[in-house]
Image (tube, rainbow, N blue to C red; front, side, top):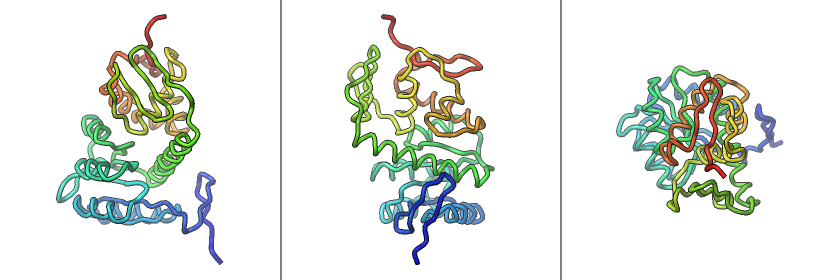
Length: 245
């Protein structure tokens, strides 16, 4: 009799419907631990230990998500991310050994959707994988049942149906997470949203320990749409600035 796996978020999936996760990490102990945890969560998992193997496996196996270490033999995780995203869009959870915001911003800039700094708990990693995949599912659903119209806030234009953003008529490439973050802010322009609110709305997290993730994504978003468009309210959160009426 075929078994059905029930994931911690309540979703059920038969083995034939399991999502594929490619784990790219050259530390055997870490990669085995991640793979074991994700398999226990009901995912199909393959692993790669260097940059070239990661790109080849991603092309051949077509994973639904990558867990990707920055430091790799062959070429690093940033180059892996660039090459894989050039093949097809896929959510990427980046792992970094350094608590360096510059590294995080570079990772987000080449197409990573989220990052974790080592050491991390396997429980949190599994939770973030579930969240990233739920976001992809929501985006796919929105593409089939799009909101009508285009939201224009001064020179900023948000096309919900096509998930496109333009500034002064020029297309701006945003990752899926950046787009969802911008839409969340744009739904209540000028209103201040706390980091905890943004985590709940965009990342579907109830754990406030991820607020630094919000800050890094805001910085990446500012670089793309203009720093002046997102106001920081120190100790509280962020607001999307709009032209005075």
